Image: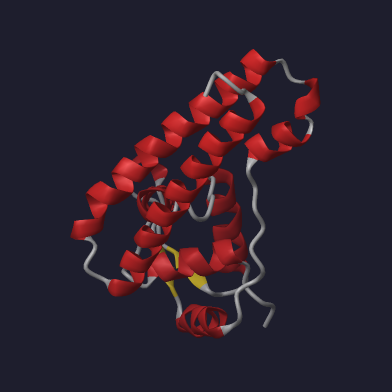
Length: 172
């Protein structure tokens, strides 16, 4: 059986909790994994078709708004278990600000300042959200993910402040 990619594995993981539509899966991903694994609606529906073709999920008849609930099959449970126990692939950082900064010599200081300030505000908001949800996460493994989010945002905020000081002297 071909290996699962991380999106397929996460969809099967969500389906362990019971049948869900593509919309439900997208909402579940956005509510929990969104900042750590980007899943778009096109990913969800494309991967559900692939999982269905491989016999790992089964689609039910369409319900309200033509939404079709998907159920994980026994083969899907085995594939998920195999995927979950495989070594994770190496991390790949996708940080659009870093790409802009790489070519930053072509940026005006005001544009760079705007980018850094905007990113910092977004990260402060995410940090506040993680801190807000942390006490309500009772599964230790999920709590570890939230703590990672807190530590990551704190580290990036410190890096943003340092970058602003070094690149915008007197303005940071």
